[in-house]
Image 1 (cartoon, rainbow, N blue to C red):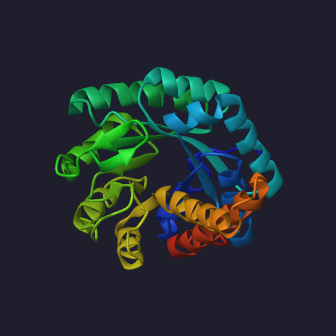
Image 2: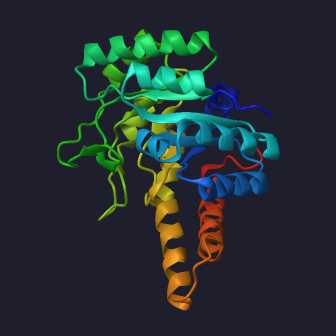
Image 3: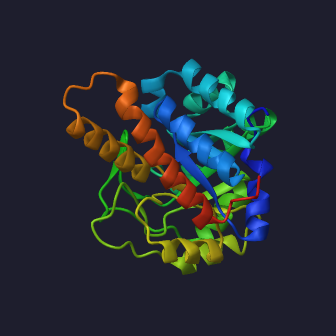
Length: 284
């Protein structure tokens, strides 16, 4: 199966009140683990790729791995640029074969964010590529993007609704109290903002910073209208812990397969659990 736009499954997620996970990929083992869990659970998948990960893996390798996973699995898989910073980056990804892009103009003034996002949407939609936009700022660190959690700003529902009306994005990321990375305490999600926006637009709300959010909070967010949830840090934590354990067990090991195999297995467990939590199992 070829890579698909997020529009192949996000409308269904909104209608049936489940969420599709965006699981970021950082190397081959991430791709394999996410795909294996998706196949076991018969779930649609979104491979998220940050600009930092794209520089690390290389554009050609990234697209080739994603296409191989889609072909092997037969699942609807979207290859999605995560937090694209410019029109030029988004277009480079589309030309290379990405089926979805996010343009993050949240650091711009509101009107400028709308203007820039509209440009990306116009070009991407002409190529059959879905677009995610963002409003408000999400705390924490993800690759090149760092926002102090106290400086993070919640999205205003009326502005988010107008943002969608003006831009026509296919998924609407709004700041509702989550943060990138793992949490030091329990995050305080504003479900009222999710519901206020999701009830007024035909596309799902996106929850960034899904790693470490309690299961009950995730369920409430989905019930309120979150149809796409991003996970990266939990996979990184699980993989790194498995690698450290393998190296501690055998200090002489030099074969990377000996420690990357348990890392991959650990990520399969994480992704499988998230798919079931999000309710996207058996929705491919």
